[in-house]
Image 1 (tube, rainbow, N blue to C red):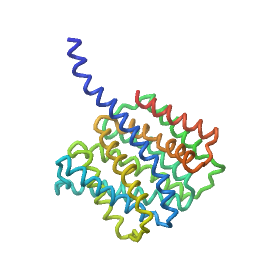
Image 2: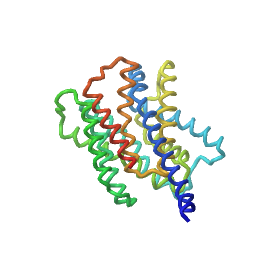
Image 3: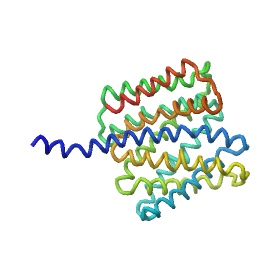
Length: 291
C-alpha cells in the first residue's frame, strides 16, 4: 500500500521539480534582456521598435517550432476574447507602463517597482487558484523585495507620484502574465499560448512602432527574440503547468541578479558589496519559495 502511494505521488513531484528548474532557466534567459537592449539602444532605436521586432522574430521561431511539433498555430475563435485581454494587459499595457516609468524616473526605480509582482502573485494565487498563503512564501517575498531594493539602491529615490503609480501598475500587469498563463495552459499547449498572445500583442504595437532598423542591429534583435522571448517564455509557460503562480513569480526574481552579473562580466559595470548581498537575499528567497 505504501509503495503504491509513492508510485502515485512520484510523477507529480518529479514534474514540479522540473517545473522549478524551468522557472530558473527562464529567469536566466530573461536576465539577458538588458544586455541585448543595451546593444540595441546604441543604434538609437525606440523602445517600441525594439519590442516590436522582439515579438515579430519570436513569432517566427514559434511558428517553426509549432509546425515541427505538429501543432496548429491559432486558437479557436471562442478563445479570442480571453487572449485579447491577456495580450492587452500582459504585453501592451505592461510594456507601456514599464518603459514609461523608466522614462519619467530611472531604470533602477522601474526595476524596483516591477518586482513588486510577487506580492500581487501571492494575492492572485490565493484568490484565483486557492494556493496556500504559507509563512515561507511571505518571508520569501520579503527577502526578494529587500534584495531588489539593495540591487537598485544608488542614492535617494526621488520620484513623482505619477512614477510611483505607473511603477506599481507595471508590477501588477507583470504579475498578471502568470495568472493568464495558468488559465491558458489548461486548454492550450504552452508554445501555442505564447504564439497567440504575442501575435495579438504585435497588433497592439504596430501603430506606434517605427519599422526602420539598421542591418547591423538585426543579429541583436534575433538574439533578443530567441533567448529572453522565445526560449524564456516557453520555459516559464511550461513550468506553470506544475508550479504555483506565487512560487514561480518569486523564483523568477533571480532575473535581476543574472542581469547584474552579466552586465559586470560583459560591460564591466560595478558590482558592489551591497548588490552582492541583495543578490544573495533574492536567491535565498527563491529557494525558500520552493518549500
